[in-house]
Image (cartoon, rainbow, N blue to C red; front, side, top):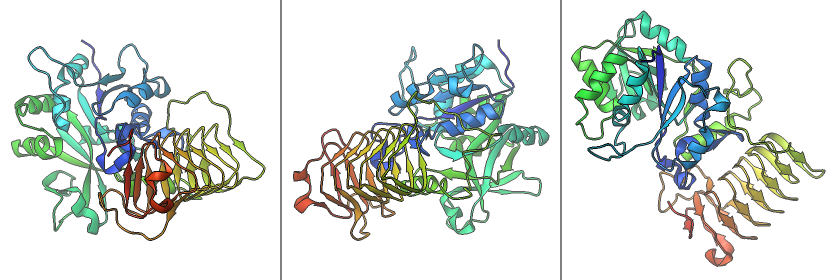
Amino acid sequence: MIKKEMIAMLLAGGQGSRLGVLTKNVAKPAVAFGGKYRIIDFPLSNCINSGVDTVGVLTQYQPLRLNTHIGIGIPWDLDRNIGGVSILPPYEKSNCSEWYTGTANAIYQNLGYMEYYNPEYVLILGGDHVYKMDYEAMLEFHKLNHADITLATIPVPMEEASRFGVVITDENKKIIEFEEKPEKPRSNLASMGIYIFTWKVLREALITLSEQKGCDFGKHVIPYCHNRGDRVFAYEYNGYWKDVGTLGSYWESNMELIDLVPEFNLYEEFWKIYTKSDTIPPQYIGESAVISKAIIGDGAEVHGEIYNSVIGSGTIIGHGAVIRDSIIMKGTVIEEGAVIDKAIIAENVVIGANAKLGVGDDIPNKKEPNIYSFGLVTIAENSRIPANVFIGKNTAIAGYTSISDYPNGMLESGETLIKAGGGL
């Protein structure tokens, strides 16, 4: 039996429904970020930078892009004979076949993987947060306190604490009480969904709770262990951490990368973010191009104007096109004269010549006001927008659209347009 001190289990099966059409065909951890990366690159890079060389990635929803991206783990130095990265989808067992029904149920279904490595500690991670964190420092804290479970926590503004699961601790950071999204929070220490378990404690809890429907760490496992008298501690993290689970937070965190002194720096030598890089030519900036405060990916060809935006690799920005405050993902073509204000445009989209995106009043979306908000235009991957149309704010478009889909050449603010090949 192989012995590892700590292995990581990375939960990457989420649909990310709050990202709307962006996650129609792709799991949330595989969504592009920062012009070059995918969201899962951040926890994977944190693992290898923290000396964690054995990572199980649990996939479920639309896993193809994620599997292709991770491959055998070469970009993160996780291509190893012993350890490395392993993709762990749900699979058919001899007595049953079931999907992962909760975060803890997913880990329980992979007990055999963990038993193979027989670790002293297991690190549980989500695949949908953007941050840099030294898990080794968290493990030292765990050992120092002889903890059974350590939760990573982050201080949040008190007025926002009701959106999170918060913990109440004593002076030694031992957790006394949990409050799940409390109306009147008594603490601002929010759980980040990152846990270190002593292996035997985790194993016993998962087996005991295996019949629990939709078994979840926050709702079931940690309260069970706490009530049983296990030592549960809060490790306080004070760096940058962003849950990019909504279109607003996803757009904001991309825009923060462009700041003169970014709060989250992608360029630090000592804590690199690794990713699978395609072999593509360098970017080309044309004679008529104007660029101000932007991230431009490799292989991009720019002839238009770009202001305060993140442009993915292999994109083409035509002559006279103007892009402001937007995220344009890999392989997208913006034809000449198009004007784009505050949009998120996914991969391999074509925006027709002289189209205008992000015009009109800030009217709430009629179908999904909680998803398509923030004044954004959101366009799903592989979509086509015809030339000369006007598209309002808080709108969503997916699929091949034609001029006949736009009454009077306009998609009004708050409208949703889903065509063949599209979908929510």
